[in-house]
Amino acid sequence: MQQLLAPVKAFLGCETPDAWVEKASNPEWLQDILIDHCNCELKAAQTALFLIRKYAVSPESGAALLAWAKPYEEFVYHKDRDMAAFLSRTGKKNDLELELTPKAGFAHGEELIAKMVRLIKEEFHHFEQVLEIMQARGIPYSNITAGRYAKGMMSHVRTSEPGTLVDKLIVGAFIEARSCERFAKLAPFMDEELERFYVSLLRSEARHYQDYLKLAEAVAGGNIDERIGYFAKVEAALIQSEDDEFRFHSGTPKN
Image (cartoon, rainbow, N blue to C red; front, top):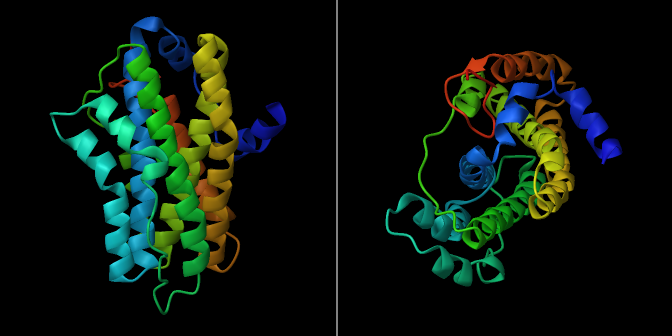
């Protein structure tokens, strides 16, 4: 595990504050952590879906992607939800049914599609796994507001292409890397089931951040160390500063 985490820690600008780990490992906050973790998995899939639809595929393929995500989004955004019914009809039954057609004029379309489709499949599966854990523990899914983290990162994305796409991919890398680091931080303090689950997520999250970086470098057509360094400082500031809300990617708890 340490070998897997070494490049993740080197990539991030700071470690998660002990105060966040202490609060997140308190059983009183387990429900909030699991619900927000569930939301984070869906948001990660939605981000990848957006990137494919905007940059890499035809409108017909974009519609197929929306249909793929529909059961997950309906479950989250509708007030009347049945966790058991949702879990019984997703999983292997809810796979992408059509082969995606790359959009002409984008040189990196096939690579972006391949990496992001694999990421989406894994994030949907993780979403289902968290829901299964919640269901087994009698924790109902509920809507909670998003924290400041992702919005704070995205506010620094450049507004002209290809800089916009490069920066969005770098932001995606930081979000995945931070998730990986936090799973590792939390695992030793969790019960046996959650410890195994969090450790099992490390490998995919580590690969996700690397996939985002490879795509960013390909789109940029050269070295992206300067932009990585810039976002490392932005991300570290969000993680180390005090945060009013407590979320999976929040900063240092105020209390």
